[in-house]
Length: 293
Image (cartoon, rainbow, N blue to C red; front, side, top):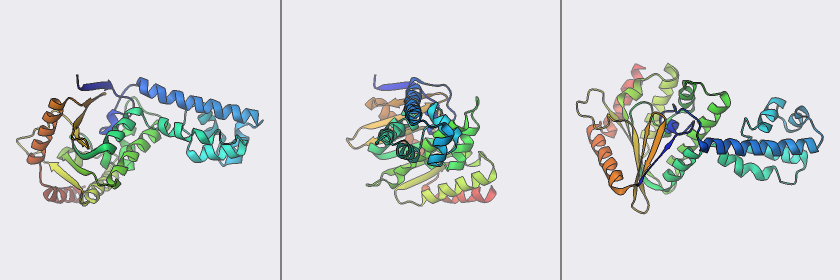
């Protein structure tokens, strides 16, 4: 069909909004990996004759964290696995799990999107509800996930924020990726996280907007003609000449690979860019909003 759609996991729709719902099979797979890693850590600890508190003291972590890792409730950091490997003398067994944990740490949907972005030569996105995920500060992203109802746990929020921030390395990619992002004016004025969080977020937009390979534009609320009222999306131009689209709505995300559908989405994005303020005008507009915030 050329259009693939899957129910998003707890971080998928959060690629832009941070407000996904539900637990997908992909998320279950990640949880299964973390549980398996936890079982291995526990088996090695018990074989060494140590309690959770004793292991924690030996590696510089609390017993509660050790317990969370063993139960698969928390993804262990690489330093945790390396220290545990040394303390339990497992000969590299635990340290070797770092790659598996790294893959499980970020939801598959986010990993797949990051892979697409890594292979793209050009990326364009329109955000109509909140600041696009590639531009969000840690505080802003954390506030978004904190607003989610039913509420996420602190561990889930930490995981999703880390996944969000990991994608932002795209700005430093070599060769440079051509990036354009159009934001509805509403996204600049919605006070996610409060005044100070929003001020720092607006400052981040200004900072990234000064990069030579990035254009940030604003679609004023006063515009009579607006081609993006149906919602946010992004378009990626791949190295082989193909165009891929990605659309998010509520708890669903669709990747569009059908050439005709992707071209239509690309055309729509071009119209949105033409209706928005120019990048220079947008910088001045964001500075004005910052001064009013």
